[in-house]
Image (cartoon, rainbow, N blue to C red; front, side, top):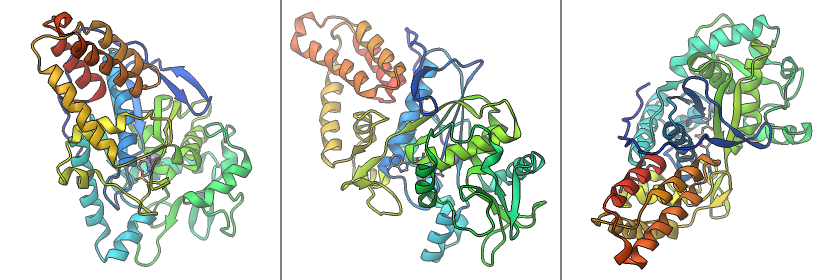
Length: 410
Ligand code: 5CA
Ligand code: ZN
């Protein structure tokens, strides 16, 4: 699929530290140690509605990781999928009486525009499920050869018993898994399943639904297998970070990892699993199904500076669940005006230390609030004592750091 244009990223005179992130599977902060380019997979959108601030917060968080790696001297290979055929998309297209492909294309294009406006670095491989069906089919064949599949009325299921490490990503107990599974697309009560948690790999053609030919008959992919197939084909096993929102920990990331572990014994899917907290609005997780959404595109249309949206999103730590309030974007706009004033000066307070603090905060589990505090302290120092703010290189250095590390072009 077509990706979106890369914003320019200035080179910095200083190198950032090794990047550490919180890994859900081990519940510890781990140091990433890329061998060759850092390999990143982030679960993409299901394009049946516009990008809301929850999605944006998640993609901005992984953009910080992407940038932190680049600033630490690594090349990055970034892969993101688009779930451009799945139940919620087909249901919405049906409800609105439009073609499902048209809906997916329209919303994916809007997402590209939102990501461009927010200066999110694009993936190197932006892969839709429809175009990846041959990869999905090949991956299911591997699972079949590993004895990890069975049929229920023509549908193909994955047997969770095939992954000896099942549960190792989410670290959840069975009770919690059984509670979450039906809420997140699972079908525990389907008759004929061996284990209620077994996941659908291939859904046989139903009347009125799109279907593609395969060795298992005409049908379409289940959800989790798309990410296993795309990640394995474009990154390979043991890639550095699998990312997404915390709503994907179980079953999605557990299953995607499980598929790979069943077909490639001894190989981990990813080396670390990193999850963002949920953004809420009006007290509830922002979600397309609840409808309590603030769209990035609407804010942009109403004249809000995309950099103010980005700064507002960076104000919370990526791992925390948080509440979006409408004043956050106005406050961010005020902050930007103050910062732009200082960056526009001919001189400022020396910035070398603040620049290093920004890079250190971001390398320390993507601590954006800590990075913003370092910038604010430098701004305050410049404004508090203009007579001492005589460094002519400081404004340009800080402008480049804000751009390269935080994605804020001011
Ligand atoms: N297509 C699948 C992943 S393969 C999917 O979950 N799509 S999505 O459109 O529902 O979500 C896209 C990304 O945004 C996912 O990483 C999801 O975890 C994240 N996300 C969804 N809602 C929120 C929210 N309220 N706050 C933060 N992140 C969210
Ligand atoms: Zn995914």
